Amino acid sequence: AQRVTQPEKLLSVFKGAPVELKCNYSYSGSPELFWYVQYSRQRLQLLLRHISRESIKGFTADLNKGETSFHLKKPFAQEEDSAMYYCALDLLTGGGNKLTFGTGTQLKVEL
Amino acid sequence: SAVISQKPSRDICQRGTSLTIQCQVDSQVTMMFWYRQQPGQSLTLIATANQGSEATYESGFVIDKFPISRPNLTFSTLTVSNMSPEDSSIYLCSATPQEGKAFFGQGTRLTVV
Image (cartoon, rainbow over all chains, first blue to last red; front, side, top):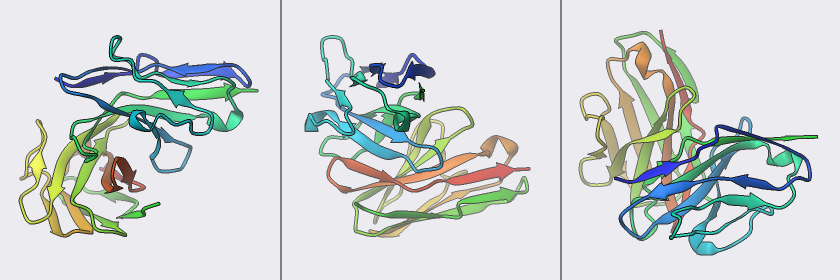
């Protein structure tokens, strides 16, 4: 069965420090993976997806099929990065976005 | 980017009653999805709302408890029926108007007393 695991509920880093939010998945098919972010009092929004191989707000994530991981990284954390981050797996091909979410990691960037 | 409007944004309801949540997308989409986020937990998919056919429910969710309508390609409703305090959650709708990019409504925060 498909599953997304985010082992850390809370991650606290200092401003300017590197950030890595961990995500592991289990899925028998070819995975399509996403990172979603929810800032305080805002709706859930897409941060990035693995097929785009893009960097958004300084964040990158590389799909590692061997380790079944899709960790989110940023070299230098900013205060505005404080938010809830969810890793998600798409259960539909073709971009249907029927998503299985991890439990989320609260990122807190301290001054 | 696409806009998904969801209402009500919050409600406090008596146990045993029902609440219908509306979701409007500003463009036509094939599928819409309904999720539940219980306090302190992640999002769980309730069902897929298909236009022109019955909704497809995930394990643990049934039509009698969560009836869904999808009258056209831009609109869907989710009803939470015969509510109990355990139904207190945030309910979110989602759609993918652009391939590979799911957008979410702002959520409906439901409290059952």
